[in-house]
Image (spheres, rainbow, N blue to C red):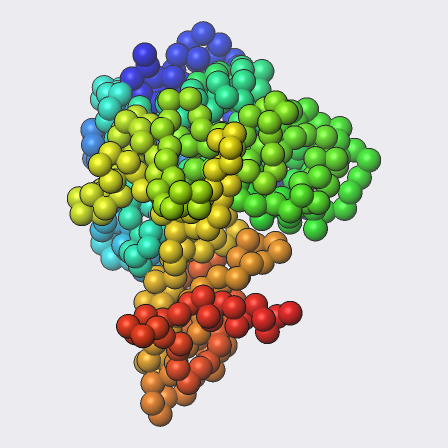
Length: 492
């Protein structure tokens, strides 16, 4: 068994050095990187990182839009036995400060345009500097199978994002299970238009391609109007999207007779699509949609639809082999989905540096997703509701309490309550209900601007409603369901 992510890359490079690994569709053209060249780039990057003090177990903060250099650093860390901390390039300076402190990163590798988000005395190198300075050098020994490979930040039900630990064994396990389920071979190519820092791109696309010796076509960014052309011209056989990007492709791109002239044999998606939307997409692009369910913490997707006639658009599918699932709740009613797997192999070992949060994540060996699902008689699962106070904005998790904490810091705000409402394109729109302090003055636009200065764009409320008071239960709990129902009723 290969012990590290880098070992898998190097193994294919030794057997098929000229086989394509990466096709990058950037703003100025298309670049192809073979397996052999990717190893050389990773080795050269590892040499530079080692010169900068990165060794076994060191954490490397990585903040960049989709670029080939993301993979250079990702594999270089694996080669060194270091831990990569890939984060959202939309992160604000405050969010970056939390990431650096929480992960104890010794170095930040950032896109040149994002250099200004690193505040204070931090060790930083930009991607352009990395490309100019890297040189071949013998790196330290590769990582062991059970070692940490990455820390992936995810928003939980508290305001502070937590770092999810991912081992080399986690990455290889999810890659092999997804490759087996989707029958990925060396002839397959993933179209990756989602961000590389996200678990979806890493777990399901990159790793399944890597273990099968296939390739990935990575776009610099998602473009609803450009996706049909990329699906044709980059010759992918597989693609992965959230429901929101699927809806955006349908809404913003003009159908063309050439849309189905592609090599796609399936498209993964997560989160709900209306049957009419799913049918339109499949008809237009000539590829079946396969829904799955997963979290950063589960690593392996507990549920995925089969490729046969049991596939359903409205279901998150059936359990993958070797993954135990249970629904905790009243008999015959929706309940909390819990997953049992081997920590550090099937599921995360836990949250980095947060033993109490890790203990709360697991219940006697069962990972508590917090999400509500129901099962039918055939064992198919259906997503009912997400974890309390969590929202999905264009595929990204947003914790209501994080937005509420930012609003609470405004001098005019007494208290707030934040929730999501369905959005036909972006999954959910974020609504904030705000009570101002006595005698204070602030308008909704001012509060939106306040949030925009302190939160990533996808976390900023689209609507702020000023109120005299918030509805509460008899024990003082804010009734967010009542607020949500009020907004939905007003929109009808």
